[in-house]
Image (cartoon, rainbow, N blue to C red; front, side, top):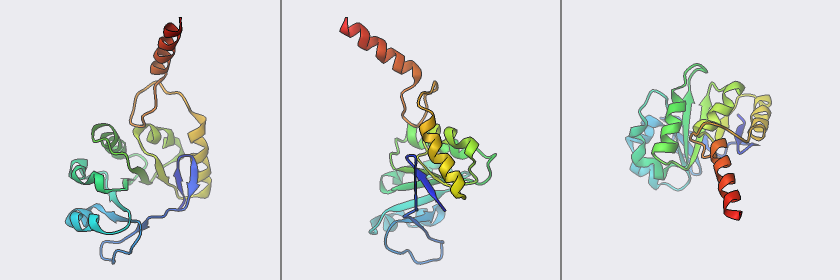
Length: 170
C-alpha cells in the first residue's frame, strides 16, 4: 500500500504487527489494545514504534505515551465517519504531537485537503493513482482562511505580517 507524505510517494517502512504475532525489530505499527497492555516494555524496544488508534477510542488514553511514538495512525473505518479528524486536531493542537500523524482506512481524494488541514501528514492509500492525486494536491493549495492543526499561516495572518513589514520599513 503506497504511503503519501510531504507530497511524495513512499513505501511504508513500518510493519503492521497482529496482536498475537511476535514483534520484529525495526519500525512497527501495533494496535491500540496491544500498545496499552504493555506500553512501557514496547517503548523500550529498539526500533521506531507506532500505534493504530481507532476512532472510537479516546485520545486521552494515548496522551501519556505520545513522546514515545513515532507514528499515530488514525483510522477512518468508512469515508463518512469523521471522528479521526477530531482526534487529529486534538493531538496536534491540544497535545502538541509532532510525530507522524497518519490517516488510514477509507480515505478518499475528496477528503485529502481537509485531512491535511486537520494535521495529518501521511496517508495510506489503496491505489497508486490515488497516491499520485494525493501527492499533487499538496502542491495545489498554498493559502487558507481557517486556522487548523497543520500549522500553516492563514491568509489573514499573512496580510497582517505584510502590513506590519510595510509599516516598519516606512
